[in-house]
Image 1 (cartoon, rainbow, N blue to C red):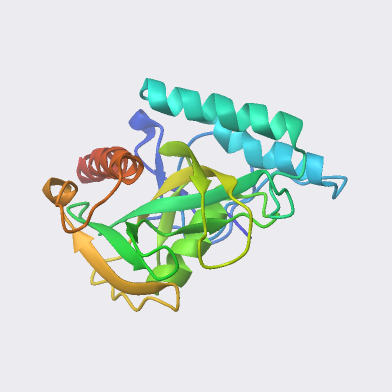
Image 2 (cartoon, one colour; image 1 turned 120 degrees about the horizontal axis):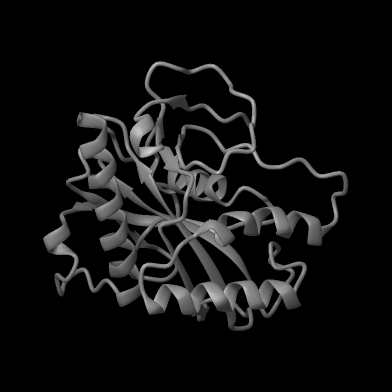
Length: 241
Protein backbone atom coordinates (compact mmCIF):
# COMPACT_ATOMS: atom_id res chain seq x y z
CA UNK A 1 0.00 0.00 0.00
CA UNK A 2 1.12 3.56 -0.62
CA UNK A 3 2.94 5.86 1.74
CA UNK A 4 0.76 8.89 2.44
CA UNK A 5 2.78 11.57 4.17
CA UNK A 6 3.71 15.13 3.31
CA UNK A 7 6.76 17.26 4.07
CA UNK A 8 6.54 19.40 7.17
CA UNK A 9 8.83 20.45 10.00
CA UNK A 10 11.94 20.30 7.86
CA UNK A 11 14.09 21.53 10.70
CA UNK A 12 13.34 18.44 12.76
CA UNK A 13 13.40 16.15 9.71
CA UNK A 14 9.94 14.81 10.43
CA UNK A 15 6.92 14.34 8.19
CA UNK A 16 3.22 14.53 8.92
CA UNK A 17 0.10 13.86 6.90
CA UNK A 18 -1.21 17.42 6.80
CA UNK A 19 -2.18 18.70 3.39
CA UNK A 20 -1.18 15.75 1.22
CA UNK A 21 -3.41 12.73 0.81
CA UNK A 22 -2.13 11.57 -2.56
CA UNK A 23 0.13 8.50 -2.76
CA UNK A 24 3.83 9.28 -2.81
CA UNK A 25 6.60 7.33 -4.41
CA UNK A 26 8.83 5.32 -2.13
CA UNK A 27 11.98 7.39 -2.37
CA UNK A 28 13.96 5.07 -0.13
CA UNK A 29 14.19 7.72 2.58
CA UNK A 30 14.74 6.54 6.13
CA UNK A 31 13.23 9.70 7.56
CA UNK A 32 10.48 8.74 10.02
CA UNK A 33 6.95 9.91 9.31
CA UNK A 34 3.27 9.26 9.97
CA UNK A 35 1.42 6.76 7.78
CA UNK A 36 -2.33 6.33 7.42
CA UNK A 37 -1.86 3.06 5.51
CA UNK A 38 0.69 0.27 5.55
CA UNK A 39 4.02 1.92 4.67
CA UNK A 40 5.60 1.07 1.35
CA UNK A 41 8.48 -1.40 1.58
CA UNK A 42 11.34 -2.25 -0.71
CA UNK A 43 10.19 -4.44 -3.58
CA UNK A 44 11.66 -7.92 -3.88
CA UNK A 45 12.72 -9.87 -6.91
CA UNK A 46 12.08 -13.06 -4.98
CA UNK A 47 9.26 -14.08 -2.66
CA UNK A 48 11.32 -16.39 -0.44
CA UNK A 49 11.01 -16.06 3.32
CA UNK A 50 14.60 -14.99 3.90
CA UNK A 51 14.33 -12.01 1.55
CA UNK A 52 11.04 -10.94 3.10
CA UNK A 53 12.52 -11.14 6.59
CA UNK A 54 15.45 -8.96 5.52
CA UNK A 55 13.02 -6.23 4.45
CA UNK A 56 11.10 -6.48 7.73
CA UNK A 57 14.31 -6.19 9.73
CA UNK A 58 15.20 -2.85 8.13
CA UNK A 59 12.94 -1.16 10.70
CA UNK A 60 14.68 -3.06 13.51
CA UNK A 61 18.12 -2.09 12.24
CA UNK A 62 17.13 1.60 12.20
CA UNK A 63 15.87 1.42 15.78
CA UNK A 64 18.13 3.17 18.30
CA UNK A 65 17.73 1.65 21.78
CA UNK A 66 17.10 4.11 24.60
CA UNK A 67 18.19 1.77 27.40
CA UNK A 68 19.98 -1.52 28.03
CA UNK A 69 16.78 -3.56 28.04
CA UNK A 70 15.85 -2.37 24.57
CA UNK A 71 19.41 -2.99 23.35
CA UNK A 72 19.33 -6.55 24.69
CA UNK A 73 15.98 -7.31 23.04
CA UNK A 74 17.16 -5.85 19.74
CA UNK A 75 20.26 -8.08 19.77
CA UNK A 76 18.16 -11.16 20.58
CA UNK A 77 15.75 -10.44 17.76
CA UNK A 78 18.49 -9.92 15.17
CA UNK A 79 20.32 -13.05 16.34
CA UNK A 80 17.15 -15.16 16.23
CA UNK A 81 16.28 -13.92 12.75
CA UNK A 82 19.75 -14.84 11.52
CA UNK A 83 19.14 -18.44 12.62
CA UNK A 84 15.48 -18.66 11.55
CA UNK A 85 14.77 -17.32 8.05
CA UNK A 86 11.07 -18.12 8.51
CA UNK A 87 10.76 -15.93 11.63
CA UNK A 88 8.03 -13.82 10.00
CA UNK A 89 5.70 -16.82 10.05
CA UNK A 90 3.91 -18.72 12.82
CA UNK A 91 5.26 -21.92 11.30
CA UNK A 92 8.54 -21.00 13.00
CA UNK A 93 7.68 -22.97 16.14
CA UNK A 94 10.51 -21.65 18.31
CA UNK A 95 9.28 -18.09 17.92
CA UNK A 96 8.22 -15.45 15.42
CA UNK A 97 7.91 -11.74 14.83
CA UNK A 98 4.94 -9.77 16.08
CA UNK A 99 4.15 -6.06 16.01
CA UNK A 100 2.22 -4.02 18.54
CA UNK A 101 1.59 -0.37 19.29
CA UNK A 102 1.01 2.26 21.91
CA UNK A 103 -2.13 4.05 20.74
CA UNK A 104 -2.44 7.65 21.90
CA UNK A 105 -5.28 10.10 21.50
CA UNK A 106 -4.74 13.04 19.16
CA UNK A 107 -3.48 15.29 21.97
CA UNK A 108 -1.09 12.63 23.31
CA UNK A 109 -2.61 12.92 26.79
CA UNK A 110 -3.96 9.36 26.99
CA UNK A 111 -3.04 5.89 25.78
CA UNK A 112 -5.31 2.96 24.99
CA UNK A 113 -5.15 -0.47 26.62
CA UNK A 114 -7.39 -3.46 26.06
CA UNK A 115 -8.39 -6.33 28.30
CA UNK A 116 -7.31 -9.25 26.13
CA UNK A 117 -9.92 -11.98 26.06
CA UNK A 118 -7.48 -14.86 25.47
CA UNK A 119 -4.75 -13.78 27.88
CA UNK A 120 -6.94 -12.12 30.52
CA UNK A 121 -4.68 -9.10 31.04
CA UNK A 122 -4.57 -5.43 30.11
CA UNK A 123 -2.24 -5.06 27.11
CA UNK A 124 -1.48 -2.90 24.10
CA UNK A 125 -2.92 -3.90 20.69
CA UNK A 126 -0.74 -6.22 18.61
CA UNK A 127 -0.49 -9.42 16.66
CA UNK A 128 1.49 -11.74 14.40
CA UNK A 129 3.31 -10.57 11.30
CA UNK A 130 2.14 -13.65 9.37
CA UNK A 131 4.61 -13.00 6.57
CA UNK A 132 3.90 -9.27 6.19
CA UNK A 133 7.16 -7.38 5.53
CA UNK A 134 5.93 -3.99 6.76
CA UNK A 135 6.06 -4.24 10.55
CA UNK A 136 4.57 -0.75 11.08
CA UNK A 137 1.81 -1.91 8.74
CA UNK A 138 1.21 -4.95 10.95
CA UNK A 139 1.03 -2.72 14.04
CA UNK A 140 -1.44 -0.40 12.30
CA UNK A 141 -3.57 -3.31 11.09
CA UNK A 142 -3.76 -4.89 14.52
CA UNK A 143 -4.50 -1.58 16.26
CA UNK A 144 -7.30 -0.87 13.80
CA UNK A 145 -8.84 -4.32 14.20
CA UNK A 146 -8.57 -4.51 17.98
CA UNK A 147 -9.69 -0.97 18.80
CA UNK A 148 -12.16 -0.43 15.96
CA UNK A 149 -10.93 3.16 15.56
CA UNK A 150 -11.09 4.59 12.05
CA UNK A 151 -8.31 6.87 10.79
CA UNK A 152 -5.37 5.67 12.87
CA UNK A 153 -1.84 6.69 11.86
CA UNK A 154 1.42 4.87 12.63
CA UNK A 155 4.86 6.43 13.14
CA UNK A 156 7.26 4.54 10.89
CA UNK A 157 10.12 4.27 13.38
CA UNK A 158 9.84 1.65 16.18
CA UNK A 159 9.53 3.01 19.69
CA UNK A 160 10.36 -0.23 21.52
CA UNK A 161 11.37 -3.86 21.02
CA UNK A 162 10.52 -6.69 23.38
CA UNK A 163 11.16 -10.44 23.53
CA UNK A 164 8.91 -12.53 25.74
CA UNK A 165 7.74 -16.10 26.15
CA UNK A 166 4.16 -16.68 25.05
CA UNK A 167 2.30 -19.30 27.06
CA UNK A 168 -1.26 -20.05 25.93
CA UNK A 169 -2.88 -22.27 28.53
CA UNK A 170 -6.21 -22.47 26.70
CA UNK A 171 -4.97 -24.16 23.55
CA UNK A 172 -2.50 -27.04 22.98
CA UNK A 173 0.22 -25.01 21.31
CA UNK A 174 3.82 -25.14 22.52
CA UNK A 175 5.33 -22.25 24.43
CA UNK A 176 7.27 -20.00 22.07
CA UNK A 177 8.95 -16.60 21.86
CA UNK A 178 7.35 -13.45 20.53
CA UNK A 179 9.83 -10.97 19.07
CA UNK A 180 7.68 -7.87 19.31
CA UNK A 181 8.53 -4.70 17.37
CA UNK A 182 6.48 -1.81 18.73
CA UNK A 183 5.27 1.42 17.18
CA UNK A 184 3.48 4.62 18.13
CA UNK A 185 -0.05 4.91 16.71
CA UNK A 186 -2.09 8.12 16.83
CA UNK A 187 -5.87 8.30 16.90
CA UNK A 188 -7.82 11.10 15.18
CA UNK A 189 -9.78 13.69 17.12
CA UNK A 190 -13.01 12.41 18.65
CA UNK A 191 -11.98 8.79 18.06
CA UNK A 192 -14.59 6.17 18.89
CA UNK A 193 -13.47 2.76 20.17
CA UNK A 194 -15.44 -0.33 19.20
CA UNK A 195 -13.11 -3.24 19.92
CA UNK A 196 -13.48 -6.73 18.48
CA UNK A 197 -13.72 -10.35 19.61
CA UNK A 198 -10.18 -10.25 21.09
CA UNK A 199 -10.90 -7.51 23.63
CA UNK A 200 -13.34 -7.60 26.51
CA UNK A 201 -12.88 -3.93 27.33
CA UNK A 202 -10.94 -0.89 26.12
CA UNK A 203 -9.75 1.92 28.36
CA UNK A 204 -7.98 5.26 27.83
CA UNK A 205 -5.39 5.93 30.55
CA UNK A 206 -3.05 8.76 31.46
CA UNK A 207 0.71 8.55 32.01
CA UNK A 208 0.25 8.67 35.77
CA UNK A 209 -2.10 5.68 35.65
CA UNK A 210 0.44 3.26 34.19
CA UNK A 211 1.23 1.83 37.61
CA UNK A 212 -2.38 1.53 38.83
CA UNK A 213 -2.72 -1.86 40.63
CA UNK A 214 -6.13 -2.63 39.10
CA UNK A 215 -4.64 -2.51 35.60
CA UNK A 216 -1.67 -4.68 36.49
CA UNK A 217 0.37 -3.56 33.49
CA UNK A 218 3.63 -5.49 33.31
CA UNK A 219 7.04 -3.82 33.05
CA UNK A 220 7.19 -4.42 29.31
CA UNK A 221 3.90 -2.64 28.62
CA UNK A 222 4.80 0.22 30.94
CA UNK A 223 8.12 0.67 29.15
CA UNK A 224 6.37 0.81 25.78
CA UNK A 225 3.84 3.29 27.16
CA UNK A 226 6.48 5.61 28.60
CA UNK A 227 8.50 5.77 25.39
CA UNK A 228 5.31 6.03 23.35
CA UNK A 229 3.97 8.92 25.41
CA UNK A 230 7.35 10.70 25.28
CA UNK A 231 7.60 10.45 21.50
CA UNK A 232 3.95 11.43 20.98
CA UNK A 233 4.34 14.54 23.09
CA UNK A 234 7.56 15.51 21.34
CA UNK A 235 5.91 15.19 17.93
CA UNK A 236 2.88 17.08 19.19
CA UNK A 237 5.04 19.96 20.39
CA UNK A 238 6.88 20.11 17.07
CA UNK A 239 3.65 20.22 15.10
CA UNK A 240 2.49 23.18 17.21
CA UNK A 241 5.63 25.24 16.54
